[in-house]
Image (cartoon, rainbow, N blue to C red):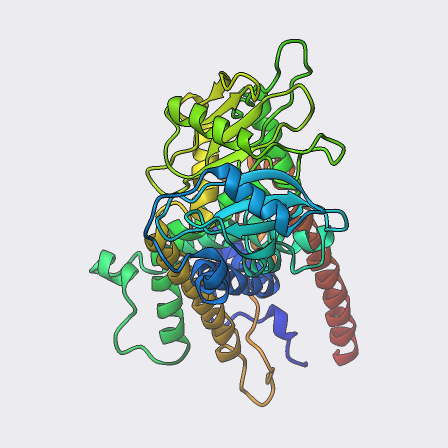
Length: 478
């Protein structure tokens, strides 16, 4: 009789009676999810590692426009700076101004310009002390071209909406792989005398696949919390899971309140979190008086808004201008006010402190995911986390190769998969609630549910095909 198919061979489980346990199922899930989803995680981790270096890349590429050469002298009025930017870009319409809070930073005057891609603006950089234009860049939500490109690579590989599926699939499975891997590693170390050390550090003296598994498991423990964080925050602004998360916030009345920009009987406009105001002003609006920016700035400072501000032109005639803090570094400053441009009076405000707890956590999580919340320390943490994930993936594939059968009658290019039929070993306490849990997870994280269902169907079909093939081989051999 011929040897059984490679996929049905077990090399790391003792023979004997079947024991009730969830570990075999988790091992098979971790193996196949790792093999199939790891390429998506590899791309996400590598692009995320590059994005963590974006501020330093900006400093190298755009130093001549982002920073001024001299920090002596008092800043000129915003009216002079905006007028200089308008003279440099007469075809554009000013939509916002980002004030220069740091002594060596330039003032950013944001324009909407016909022909630009959706979400893009043209930003003119002005020396606040001389009102001299230092350059211009095509930006997106305040990000330079380099940062925008790296962000697009990380989010959708520059493939548009279809490309966003890759990053959502990676984020959907990352937490599953991390938690299942932790359970398997703890189960493997359950008999170790020095449990904490055995879990946190690689096994000394181990060789071959045992050594690789030891490094893979211990490193996974160190990056576990970071992986869970990246997965959760990445899903909050994904396409499908993000929509469900937004719907949940709405149902719980936990979204950040919009800033009311209505004036009298004018129709109110809703603000949004982040860099709202970029490119939102109507192209048909009346030309902006540069002096209005000074009045709005004075009103905002009088209302207690310190630090760097984004001053937004009214989105519609008869509505208020906006002034929003844009300091995302801890301790954050993200309060907003609406200002009547005619009277320079504050008509409404929306403070970060008044947001619901979930809205606060969501905002902080996104900023930390982007490497902004804790400055350089945040960037270093993201860089190390991305490097750790890349190492885990490489070690995982190395184990797959090291576990390949080498006997002449069972030789194979890659390692064997865990045994089929693991569902027969599941305890009742796991089987009974499992369908409801899977349905709930599949609804909340659709790509996880759909990909898991596809895997189960495909795995079942492959198993059935091989079972029939084995049956034919046995009958012929008999």
